[in-house]
Image (cartoon, rainbow, N blue to C red; front, side, top):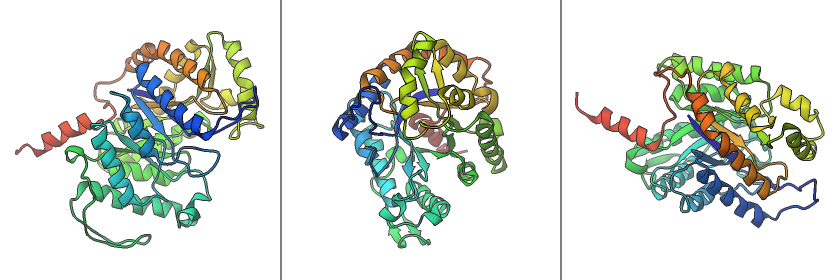
Amino acid sequence: MQIGIFTVGDVTTDPTTGRTPSEHERIKATVEIAKKAEEIGLDVFATGEHHNPPFIASAPTTTLAYIGAQTDNIILSTATTLITTTDPVLIAEDYAKLQHLTDGRVDLMMGRGNTGPVYPWFGKDIRQGINLAIENYALLHRLWREDVVDWEGRFRTPLQGFTATPRPLDGVAPFVWHGSIRSPEIAEQAAYYGDGFFHNHIFWPASHSAQMVQLYRERFEHYGHGPADTAIVGLGGQFFMRKNSQDAFNEFRPYFDNAPVYGHGPSLEDFTEGTPLTVGSPQQVLERTLSFRDYVGHYQRQLFLVDHAGLPLKTVLEQLDLLGEILPDLRKGFAEGRPAHIPDAPTHASLLAQKKTEEVPA
């Protein structure tokens, strides 16, 4: 079970002080948060991709390469890579290069994104969002697996005898998760390729998450990749912890109430009851997180959003320290009752071992 964090890179005013961090501060904070994640023993750090204010999450490969140079073990991922508006040739080359620089500590999550205006900024039509996701990933999948590609599609110029460089490290493409909040077509795409499916799992009730994951599992089995319960599933999540539950609510409430995404809507109490957001003590976060298996089954990756809504860096690092305290119990809890046939999340090492096994003559 991989446990980690992700960031969307928002630049949000702290409602308790009125101070807004600069872009420079938020970019530097992202690096500090990633380094802290490795320090406490997390498995994954992921960054989103946004190209509009108030976000600083553009150029994810630049950010991840910089973090990779200052870490040793943590897997570097995205949340998400915009497969609709980023050219698949560029993705193929950028992430293969990142693979080499980090000795394979790279995977990525493909998604359509949630910002409509980004489409025309990159010369695309939002009405073709699903079609772009399907066609662009089909090309990317080939670029990583075929040394020479001839290709023609609807949304970009044809390729003739094209080789993406560098080639993936050890001839192994980065593992891909397909991320979605509400699009069954993306769950279908993940299942078709036998890739991972990452459900955002932040703003919707458990029943919706269960439905999306179940669809992916059923289609994964339909396409012959293995039993439904062996499909590769990831979930998002959010928490805010303090040693005392009421202290957590009191401190987090102004951030929640004023957050650009979910502020000025349901109360904090209603939101925590209806979604996976957990505000309370470390024990409550531990128990709530382990309960996610009750409706999605055994899964492979859990990522938390911790640096949002204007929370200052000091507070975010304190949250990570608290996560570190319950991390051993999280790992133990996820391992309990886990059937032996349930696979771990693929890594470069496991994919390379699989490749070598497949290459051995019968």
